[in-house]
Amino acid sequence: MPCLIHASAAMLNNVPDAINRIKRNVVINHPNTYNCHIVRKIINRADEPEVGGLPTLGGLGMISADDEQDVDWDFIDNGYALPAEPFGAPSQMMDRQDANNPSLEEFRFLIEPEDADIELKKNDVIYLIISEVVLIAFEIVTVETLTNIAPFNIRYVCNKRPDLFLDFD
Image (tube, rainbow, N blue to C red; front, side, top):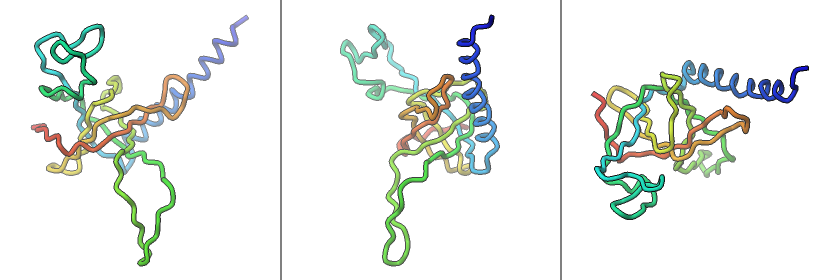
């Protein structure tokens, strides 16, 4: 007799697998999708970058890799980024019947690299390609899921990084 627990677990995994396939197809083909470049931070320290699995700064432990000064950026892949902001609370209307919406500090994107096997990580940077000249940098600060069933359906929370200017030529 087949084990119903394993069969139901396999069926349960079919749902997020199907959502991920559909999400990839939608992100790549959606009219509001931006093309993007994906880069990853590489630390250039010559000494041992980790002690016991934790990053170091000289002989001292450090808070995170964000504290590093000497870094390079490694091009990972081209990709597609679809803004995925949930529509928020109602806006305050002004006397002239226009809305005063504050600027956002974090942005949510569905991001799909051209190579489906590439996994994006926290602190990766995407450059949205607005035109041949205009690129807007966003750093992934949090990776979140919309379904709590593995394999998870991933959405990326990003912050703008106007301080990063990389040449892709």
